[in-house]
View 1 (cartoon, helix red, strand yellow):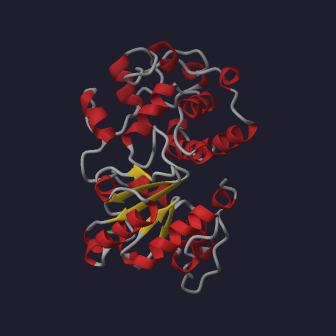
View 2: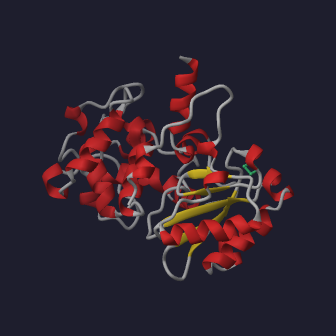
Length: 290
Ligand code: FES
């Protein structure tokens, strides 16, 4: 039983676990700036905070489950994110308006079934949207909001807080290279430089918020500790962890991404054998990723 539990644990997305357990980049991010600019406390949005600010609905009051009646289609809730059309953003979208696919709906409903409060599913739902569209598109957010029964403004406010979510086009692949202390001591900066050379991303851009390669294929960014220091120097590539990496691995990884080949199988954390445990099953979300 213990081995099965550990095997299932390995199947979970490395990046999702990281997003759920820790605040992102140490430096002030765009999301933080937007939070602060709008009077936010620097904490991720919660149903309580949203309700207290807007006073528009009782949905999500302290400790209460948000019921379908409180947050169903057409219900006005929350405040629109700056730049988002107010009326559309604060209403729970009607499912028939957004045309969500059966596949995405099923995935979101399965995610929601894991949590007693549906808003707790926001982060994995946003990952599902980002995997489907390459970034958290306005349409994708409205689709997710319609299935969840929350406003698009609420879901976008969660996405804007975390660096792992992109609210603008961000390439087909995402490479985050850790340059924090353990990785830095083992060549993390040089590794990031090599990724820059392989992708064409400017090193200054990569080190300060990240950028998309000139061909639009790869988003590359230096990153603070990704919580896998034993792999130092390491990188997260399309939500999977790889390490310890040598500079030549950076070139091989980008070549594999562009050609559609398998990325650094001998460096993948997911392929590390467990002590006495079975081999892990491939993650279907990765296997089926377009
Ligand atoms: S310092 Fe790189 S993963 Fe922790």
